[in-house]
Amino acid sequence: MRDYGGRDAAAAADLLVLGACVVVALLGYVLPRPFAAEVVTTLRQTALRPAVALRERAARDRISRFALAGIQASRDSLALRVMRDSTLRRENVALRRLVGLGEATTMPWVGGAVLHQPSATDGLTLSLNVGREDGIHQFDPVLTADGLLGYIWSVAAQSSVVLTWMHPDFGASAVTADGAILGFVQPVSVGRLGHPMLELRGVALSDSLSDGAEILSSGLGGVFPGQIPIGRIVGIEPDPLGYERLYRVAPHTNPGTISHVMVLTTSTEDGSVATGTGESPP
Amino acid sequence: MSHVWTGTGPRRRRSSDRLRFGLVISILLLLEFYLRPSLIEGRGMPDLLLLVLLLLCLRLSPGMAALAGLAIGLTIDVLSPARFGANMIAHVALGYGAAWGRAVFFADNLAVNVGLFLFGTWCRNLAVLLLSGAALGRLTAEALIWGPLQGLTTAAVGLLVVILFRDWLAIRIDR
Image 1 (cartoon, rainbow over the protein chains, first blue to last red):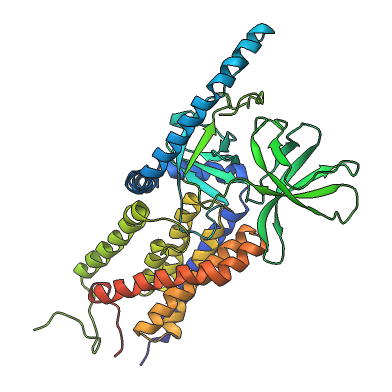
Image 2 (image 1 turned 135 degrees about the vertical axis):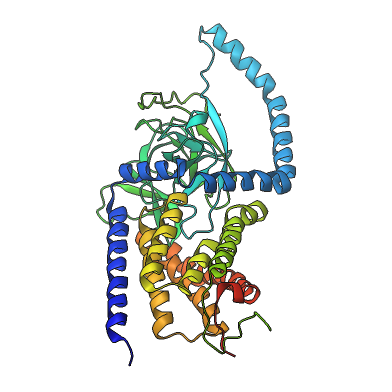
C-alpha cells in the first residue's frame, strides 16, 4: 500500500520551506535602498569575499591577456595629445599667474576595472574591483574617458557597485556647454523598441537647444562635480503638460561595454560630500 | 561488473555520490567565478550559477530546491544588485517550480533536461528584469535576443555536464 500520509507530510514541509523562502525574498525586495546597500556591502566583505576576489583576479587576467594592446594604444594617443596641448597649458599657467590666480584644483581619482556579470540586469549596476581601502566612498562620481557613467551605490573593503545612468533611480543636474540653460537628466526609454537614453527636463519653454548641443554636469546637487560630459542632444520630446521642454540626450558612455572607469574620490571620511569646483575633471 | 548506472533499476544513493555531486558543483562554481570571466565576458554567456540551481532541482525536493534558489538568488543579488531581492524571488520561484514540475510532469530524458535549462534561463531573466523595473526596450531585447541566447549557451553547457557527469549527478535518462 502506498504511503500517501508520508507524501502529504513531505509536500506540506516543502510548502512550508517555500513560504519561508518567499517571505525572506520579499523582505529583501521591499528593503529600503540604504539598508539593501548595507546588506550588499556586508555580504561582499564576508561570505562572498572569495567569489568577489576570484572575479577580480579573473578580470585582471583577462585584461592582461586580451586588452593590453588597446590600453597601450590609448596611452600612446593620450601621450600625443598631452604633448600637443603642452603649449596651451603653459600659456594657461602664465595667464593665471598674470591675473593672480592660483593653480587649478585637481580632483583625486582612483582607476578601477569593471567586473561584468552574465546577468540580465548587468549595465543597470556594475561591480568594480576597487573599494573603501582604495579611498572610495558611497556617492562618489564614476566617469570613463568619454564622460559620466554614474555613482557609487555600495562600497565594500575591496569592491564596490556603481549605479549607472541606465538605472531608473539615476538623476543628475545638467547644464549646456555655454552654461546658459540648466536642467535635470533622467533615464528614459525612447521609441517602440525602448532604446535607453537620458532626458533633459526642466528647460523653460523660452529656451531652445539645437541637436548636437553638448550637455555637461552642472555641479549642483552635491554628487557630481561640474563640467563632466554627459551626452549630446539628439531630439526633442513633446511635454504632455506643456510646462517645459523635454530633450532627448544620447549619453557618451555605454555601461554594457565599459571595462575601465575612474572614480572621483570627492567624499570626505565623515561621509559628507564635497561639491566639485567644476574646474578640472580628470 | 559495471558500476555505471544504466537507469533500468532502482539506485541507492551512496555517500560517494554526494561527494561526486559536490565536486561537479565546485567545478561549475570555479568556472563561473574564475575561468569564464578570465576568458570572455558579456551578455549571452552561460550562467553557471543558474545551471547549478537547475542541476540541484533535478536531485532535491521542491522545498530544498526553493532554499537553494534563495541562496543562489541572494548571491546574484549581492554581485549584481540592480534591484535587491529581485533575483531571490525569481530563483526561489524557479527552484521550486522546476523541482516540483520534474516530480510531477517532466520525463527523465535529455531533451527535457536541456529544455528545462533553456526555458528556465529565459524565464528567470525576464522575471528579474520585470522585478527590477527595467524599461520596455530592455525587456523586449531580453525576451527576443539576450534571453534565448543565454538560454542556449547555458543549455549547451548543461547538456555537456549532464552527458559527462550523468552517473556522478545521478540523473536518470530514459533511452
